[in-house]
Structures are given as structure tokens and as C-alpha cells.
Image (cartoon, rainbow, N blue to C red; front, side, top):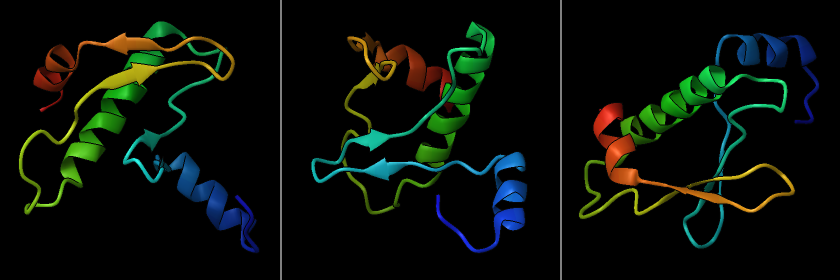
Length: 91
């Protein structure tokens, strides 16, 4: 992120700010970990991300809000995750 106030940006990240982007097809993209993270850290970050996405869901949204969940590293094949199991544990 490019900013003129680097100190404030660092404080926000350390406080747990979650950044994600949405492409034109409605896919969410977010970094939830690094290669140095353990499985528990990645799971906790994914859980926090999904909770935030569900919290931000507009009340006018009808039907299935999250259709599928897929995880991948930068240069590897994606792994599809069972969304029913994940979303029942997130709420």
C-alpha cells in the first residue's frame, strides 16, 4: 500500500486490519498468511477473514452469500474447501 502516513498504516496492520479486494466476478482475494506461518495461524487467520466477510454481508443480500472457498499459495494449484463445514464453524 502506498501512503504518506507510514506510521498510521503500520499501526492499523498491527491492530488487525483486514484488506481484501473483489474482482469483477465477485471473487474475494485476501492474504491470510505467509509460508513461515504454521497451520494453526493460517486457520485462525482464515477464520477471522470469513467472520469479517459474513459480518459485512449486506442485509439486503438474498440467497447463498459464499458459494465456494478455495485456498492457494501464489504459485500453486488451488485447494477447494468444503464451504458447509467452514461456514457452520464461522457463525
